[in-house]
Image 1 (spheres, chains in turn orange, purple):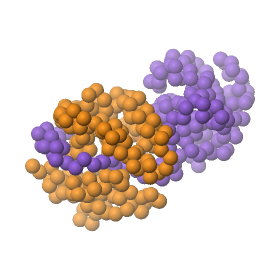
Image 2 (cartoon, chains in turn blue, green; image 1 turned 180 degrees about the vertical axis):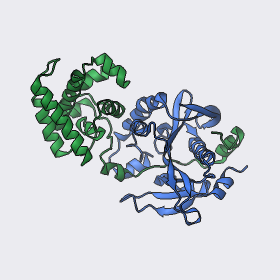
Image 3 (cartoon, one colour; image 1 turned 120 degrees about the vertical axis):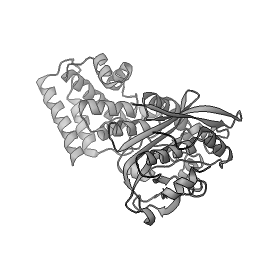
Image 4 (cartoon, rainbow over the protein chains, first blue to last red; image 1 turned 45 degrees about the vertical axis):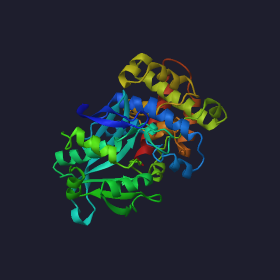
Length: 208
Length: 171
């Protein structure tokens, strides 16, 4: 059942004001409808003008093929998965699916359980490459905090893992302080870089 | 679950964070390999010339209509049981230019216990189409008459096609 975790603030770049946003655990029909009727048409319209993979990357649309509705259906009822949504101004601004049956690969924590962020995205209109006037800033940090909090809640002490899309690598490596394990060779041929956060890194990330 | 940080902490961090992308997920190639790419919606005019997709959608509409009849369901009843809009059920069954939403296909696949991968292929949503599926789907649709009650032959053909879909999914 969809549960409100808390109210946060997102920065509206256009108005330069902070606006209240709700962070929910478990995506519901409203979030999927927002994806189908908000995210998807915007993505498709933008994609129509692109003709190469480089242009897709530049438009911050390397996730254009992610079908959140299908993902939700596939994972519904499975205890190994959880989902999160960020809503602001009546619209879903961010979505995340995590898997709880994953194990760390980083030597320092090899074999220990972690929360694996399978998919994490902000709505297309919030992305710089997508539009010259992106709207909300902060969705990624909110979702990452959610993943870390969930990890602690499960007893995994804040350990998380994820594959970063190329345009996000500096965020995870530098700002979030995660460890870069390199290109994941299990995902050919356009392998993504795999990042993990240790318990210590999680503590640093959420410190004042 | 409780958030480990305060609202103020988040606000302060967002203010000073670099303004960069934060997406994380699975590589495109992996999804292409298992046929779950959803290409951009194409305008209806582009579909008119795409005969293969039209034929597959006719087969998809026939399949769903016949399954619905087999189970004695009206459009309204099927829509209610699958949480799909009635107009979308009608469009899938009757309009080969209609592009079904992936969520709708998943709902129908779950209800009728069909492999969603093949419904996606029959809807024209994937780049690749199983050749055997294509041929069998076209053959199946060609055998069907538009009657509200299935004849014995139609029921046999329907069961055979559904069995084929299940067997190929398990292969």
